[in-house]
Length: 398
Image (cartoon, rainbow, N blue to C red):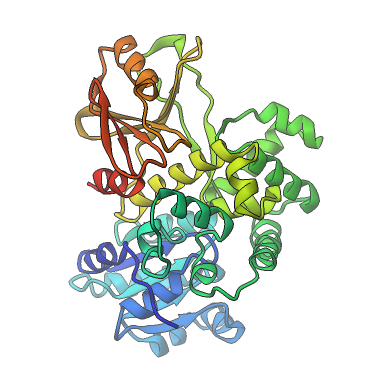
């Protein structure tokens, strides 16, 4: 099977030249092991999914490290947290050398805490999400934004689904959710009722791109609001969902202050909501919400793939004015972005961005974008342009 290069590879190589160790986290099946094996030639690869190696790392960590040698990839490090104190001693005895250890893992909560405590100042933290559209286009022929959108929803972004066209997508997602529930949620986070948790996941999918209402979600399932908040934190930590916070710095009480919820793989949303074909996707009741979810997920990936935390927000005023996305750049420059499932550019599409700039004229806004299905990028009015997905991602990549 042909290896598809990942955008984060350059960042990994640079981090290995600067830090004694790095950790690459990300959701299950996002391609972490494949990326490292194909990128880091000369590194010894060990996975703690192997019960024998895992037991050795726990019962005899010094012998485990001796046999592993230096320049080693240790996959699923969260299964042997006690190993980190011994690795710290090895690193400290070779402080003039970088790139000694590379770790991977899927469960962010526990893993990041352990690594932060044990290897503070000695480890670079990077994160790999499923394929971005720029990575996927190597394997799939795309003509325009609509092609990207349909593929992102009906096939998804996980590498195995993209590179293997014979894969049964519904069976794959069903197995993925079951593995996620059993291995991550039940064993790591001690969730009591998995059926309620799965129902919670499905209800969130049906509400993607909406302002989060935890009280309503909790009431619909019959759980407490603190339980719903805890479950949402798990989904966020394991990179199933992304919470887009409101931008309300110095804007007073005129702004909605609840986050909006998005999934980081639109294919999972379609699986959970029963959308199986392009007709249902494009003309169904969730079409606009799914296009918005798809554009937000690709924006988030663009930042993670360059080793940056996504400085992303939205604005909604109490009188109903909303702009879907605000990207904060250096010196508090704000890029307003509206997302429209529309192929025909029109001046009226710039309305909300223009109103926003006038309403909050004390903020430093840059040119605004209308991210749509348009076949080419064109200016509209007042420094607002319709832009294609590829042009948009190129502009925000920085």
